[in-house]
Length: 123
Image (tube, rainbow, N blue to C red; front, side, top):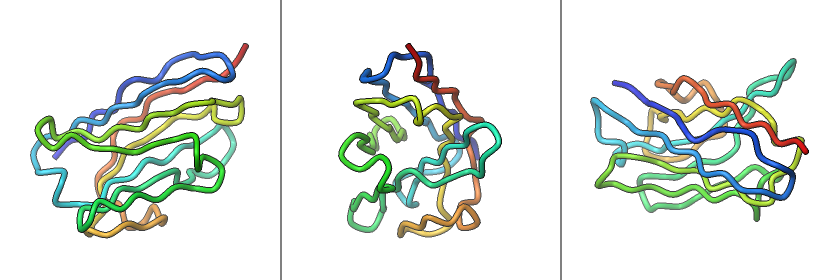
């Protein structure tokens, strides 16, 4: 079981990035999948989740309306489209597989994690 995150980089405020998380060794669509982020000196925080039961999506208030989570079952990949990026979005972003098919904001309900991809928003 492996998750491989990619797509991070340096972007100016107001810009966009799309993160990808490719899964191998299991069928990603059978599980809820989430994105978390961790800024220097801060706790890892939940960003978004996509349920496998009905495709419902959930977002932290800080990113609602700017970020969109989606999936491509054929590619066994989940994405995080990030628009209108702000300096406070700067963090290492992690994708993760939930133990269950429904979403949760608790990191302790996610059993497999990608390696993280750095997102830096700065002018």
